[in-house]
Length: 461
Figure: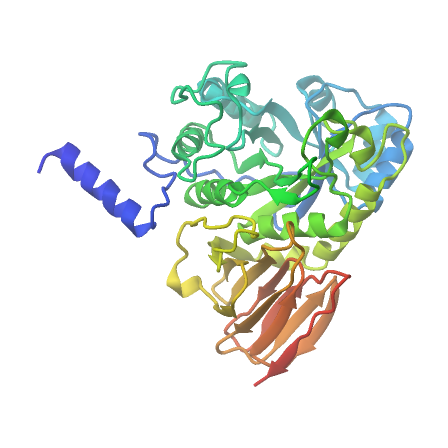
């Protein structure tokens, strides 16, 4: 058998094992570069919360106070806005970090609030060689600051791709892989990235929540899960942290179809689906100014808090209750149970397989996403669950979970902690939730419940 035929056979076997779902590894000739794992001025050992777009103007004192009260820790801008010495001192004292353009970042290097520099937002693969050099230079100048790059989503358009050097694997189609469940070209985009650039983080933005302007029917971008799954795999195989930029605004007024995400349910759902794939940072877009309708941002053009602000603040506060615990676990991917329902986000979509040793005992007849984790020190397992009917129909999902070997479960419901001496639990999921069950006779259940529906939890031995 020739080398070419042997390679084709092996690739076919990989495809068979993945149930028709392709892997980032092997999509190109690039071998993954294992991330160096550096120490930064920010804490990588806890779940981080940030926001995109924070314009510096005369409202700065109120803007940063609101930012902190929302539970956010850092913001990202593409610009080169300067901060005064008083601004930097306030951010240092209050633990607020920022990523900004070169000039503003370099000026603030003596301040711990300068978490890093924005190298590029949504690059094409043709820019990777130059970005690799820039990232290496950035680490050489400031080893404890992150050279930040934010990648394109699967639905990036040809116009975006051709702003710089076109993707070498782009075709004549309008998008990379917007309507392609296999996402071959997007896997190549990621393979090239992790093969050329040594950074400890992969960030990308994707906005899944839509609404029909004709019927008012709520919808989701069905390949959001595939996009998260693919980027999460790239993170796992190269030892990088996953940062996800989520939708915290909308553009209905300008003829778009991205609905306003000004309710806590939409924020919770995006957060927990991101956590199911191991996200280490949630970045809300947008905070103050941005590319959406101004009144849909967390802070509107007049400097007032909006309903989106209230939703983000509540969802973030609930996650913060276990932000320190969550990063003790390593993600191994996610499983979509009963994804045949056309009303479910990610309907009929296969995901990359999760090792059998990491899978939970789940009994449900509803579309439920389950992220699978093991504790980094080998002392337990963890699971994140999300109701995939939530963003389109709001229907609940009944789930039964069994934690073999566990005799105690700690529950965080909306940030409130409770204790249960059981190893089997029945839950009605009205929105996303997360749980952890170590086999060492103790477990933790992180549980988030939609306020409009009462959950029932029955526990027994």
